[in-house]
Amino acid sequence: MWANGATLAVSGRSREDLMERPVVGILNTWSDINPCNLNLRDLAQEVRTGILEAGGVPFEAPLMSLSENIIKPTSFPFRNLLSMEAEECIRAYPFDAVVLLGGCDKTQPALLMGAASAGVPMIFLGSGPATPRAMAGASLGNATSVWRAVDELRSGKTPEGQFAALERNVMGAPGHCAEMGTASSMAVVCEALGVSLPGSSLIPAADSRRTQVALAVGRNSVRLAATGGPAELERRRAAWRPPAGTHVRGYRSLQRVVDSLSDGGDVQFRAVDQARQPERRRIDARRVVHDELRSQIAKARPQTETVA
Image 1: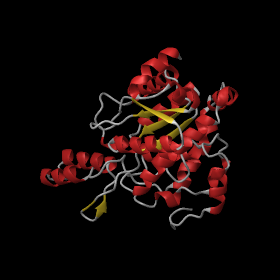
Image 2 (image 1 turned 30 degrees about the horizontal axis):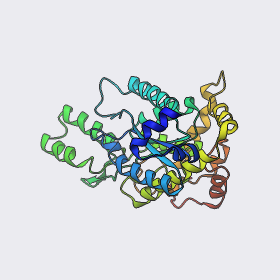
Image 3 (image 1 turned 90 degrees about the horizontal axis):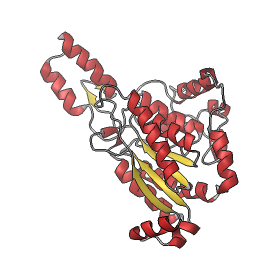
């Protein structure tokens, strides 16, 4: 602790800050080579503000960023590497709680796996879906539209000029892909598991509500850290670690949750309305807001006819 205090004095922190106030780590996967995570730098500042408002001490730690469309040869081994990086970062530094900032596909499960193994109270905040563009009368779902257009270009069905126009317009805003793909599905799973704030999973990246959520995430992370304590921390470690012999069938309910939260098309701006299905009562997980989520689900009703 003496070495910690001397080292962190450079950042303006006193020993009293570190001993008497919750220390919250902001694990950020921002990178300008990853458009899905491009807004995380701004969200991290809002999280930092929320932590300070609630009386905590924020420290930001950069982690590697996985851009699904760019990283080679595939993102899967890097997902595992990021998971190990997140776990060891949390273990290595004196964080009482952590905020996980991710967006692009494999970033989200990597952060969750690492934080779950480390056993420190956590809240996940995603970048949110990008704003979909429309072209030739059809909505573009980002990555799905790109792969389809590439196949049509190779087969000669799409002229190069038309493909060039799509290439310039399909990814028109920061945020993860706006179809119900891996990134959106993982964001919904995070909310269903209770590691994201209620109603936050699919708020678009460009929506001002995501900034409001980032502030709330910072404030809630301090509450989690302050109520932790040694006994509570040990209980959380046991609660988050999957039991021995857990089979994939034990997670089938998550598939039903995702199905109930989306009708499978573009996320667009109906996401928050969809994230309110009674099916989620079946998920018995530790939640960052405890019973508050149940009461919100009981009161909420879907506002789109396409959600069963």
